Amino acid sequence: MKIKKLDSFMQGVFLISALISVMAIILIGIFVFGGGIPFIAEYGLSNFLLGEKWTPSNTPAAFGILPMIIGSVTVTLGAIVIGVPVGVLTAVFMAEFCPTKLYKVLKPAVNLMAAIPSIVYGFFALQLIVPFMRRLFGGTGMNMLTVILLLGIMILPTIIGMSESAIRAVPKSYYSGSLALGASHERSIMKVSLPAAKSGVLSSVILGIGRAIGETMAVVLVAGNQPRIPDSLTQGVRTLTTNIVLEMSYATGQHREALIATAVVLFGFILVINGIFLLIKRKEAIR
Amino acid sequence: MHIKKSSKVLMALGMALFLAACGNSSSDATGSSLTEGEFDLTQPIHVISREDGSGTRGAFTEITKVLEKDADGNEIDATYMEAAIQNSTDGVMTSVAGDATSIGYISLGSVNDTIKALKIEGVHPTPETIKDNSYAIARPFNLVYKDKLSKEAQDFWDFIFSQQGQEMVVKEGYIEADDQAVIYTASENLDGKVSIVGSTSVTSVMEVLAEEYQALNPNVTIDITSNGSSAGITAATDGTADIGMASRELKEEEKEVLTVSVLAMDGIAVIVNKENTTDELTMEQVKAIFTGEQLIWQE
Image (cartoon, one colour):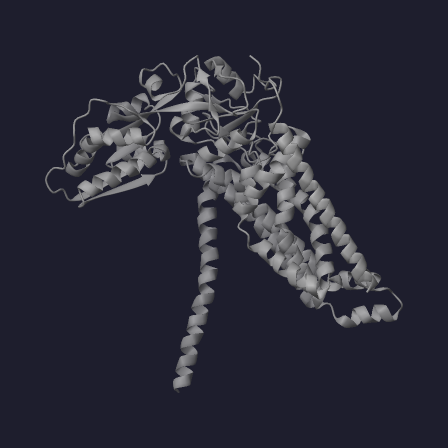
C-alpha cells in the first residue's frame, strides 16, 4: 500500500517536470506571437517581410526586414558549405579511422568546442578572422565571409557529434559484408557505412542549420550589422538575431514591437527547421 | 597499419599548414603596424556608428544634422548605410582602436588613450570647452518631474544638485551643471521610496548618486529603472515615476508639462585610430563622413 502511494506521488512529480518544459514553450510562443502578430497585422505582412528599409528612428519609420532575412539565410548556407564537409569527414574519421590514442584527445576536444560560450567564439573571430579579412579584402574586415567562417566553425561540434553516433549505429555486418565482397576498408566506409547513416547525418546538418541561424552573440561582434541587402560576400551583414539584440535595449513603442515581430519570423524559421528534422527522424523510424 | 600511417602524415601536414598560416598572419600584423612615415590619407574611411534607438546616436545625429528634418516634420536618419554598427561604447572603441582608418563617436567620459579624440571646429573636447559651449557636440543629462515631488524625492533631488552630488557627477567623467551648489545635509528621518526611470546613459551616474544618498538616508529606497530617455519622460508625465531621466533635449510639448533640470553635461567625442594623422574636423566634415558623402581621409 505504502509503495503504491509513493508510486503515484512520484508519477505526479514526473508529470509536473514534463509539463514545465511544455508550459515554457507554450508561454514563449504566446509571448512572442502575442507581441509580434499585432504589429505585423498593423504594418502589413508584405511591407514587413519584403521591405528593404530598416530605419526605426526616421519619422515616418520603416521596418522592412528583408535585408536581415537575406543575411540570415546567406550566412547559414555559407556556414553549411564550410561546416558540413569538414564536420562529416571528421565524424567518419573519428568513427572509423581514428587511432584510439588520438580519439582520447579528439573526442573531448570536440565536446569542449560545444561547451565554449558563443561570446568567446565572437572574441576569437574579432581578434583573428577580422584582421585577416581586413588584409585580404580591405574594408573593416567585418563581412559575410567572416561570419560564415565563424559559424562554420561553431556548428562543427553539433555535426561531428551527431554524425559520429549515426555512423557508429550502422550495424557492423554492413561493413563486414562489404569487406567480404572484396571492397577495401575506405571503400566500405564511404560507400556502405556512410550512406547507411544518411538520415542521422542529415539530421545533424539540420540541427547545424538551426544553430547557425539562431547564433547571436558571436555574430553581432563581427558582422558589421548594416541593415541593407549586401551585394557581395565581402560586405557587412545584419542577421535576424543580431537585429533584435542590437536594438532591443533602447527600443520603445513601435520599434520594440517590430523587434518582437522579427523574433516571430525567426521563430517561424526554427519551427520549419525542426519540422524537417522531425520528418527525417520519423522516416528513419519507419524504416 | 598502412592506413594509420597515412592518417598520421595527413595530420602532420595539416598541422604544418596551420602553423604556417599562423606565422604568416602574425608577421603581417607587425608589418602593418610598423609602416613608417605618414598615415595614408587616400584610404577609405570606415564609419562606425551606434545602433538605432541609442541615446548617443540620437544626440549625435541630431547635433551634427545627420538626422535631416523636412518641413512636414519627417525625420530621416541619413547615417551612411555601409557604416558598421556596434551596440556599445566599448564595441565602438575596440573597432576604432583596431582599425587605422575608422571613425566613431562615444561619450566623452569614456575616452581613453587607446583612441584619439578629434578637435571639432578647432576646439578640443574637454570639460571646460563643453561648459563654455565652445565644443559643439554636447548633450545635457536632464532630470524631469511633474507638478510636485514627494518629500523623499525632493530630498534626493536636493542631494543631486548639492555640492556633494555635483562632485560625484564630475568624478564619473561628466561636466557639472552648477559649480556653485550648496552643501547637502541629511535632514530629518525620511522613510519612503523614490522611483526613477529613464535613459541608460544617465543611469550609471544616477546609480552612484543613489548609493551615496542611501548611505546618508538608510530608510529611503531608490528604485532605478533604465529603459531609455523617451520611456523616462513618459513615466514622469503619467506619474508612474517620481523622476525621469533623459539624455536628450526635451521637446516643446514635453517642456510644457514637466519641470526640467540639467544634471550634467556630456560631450560626444569623435574618435579615430591613434595612427591617423587627422587632428581636427569641421561640423560639415563630420556630417559628410557620417552620411557617406566623404569616403576617404584627406581634407
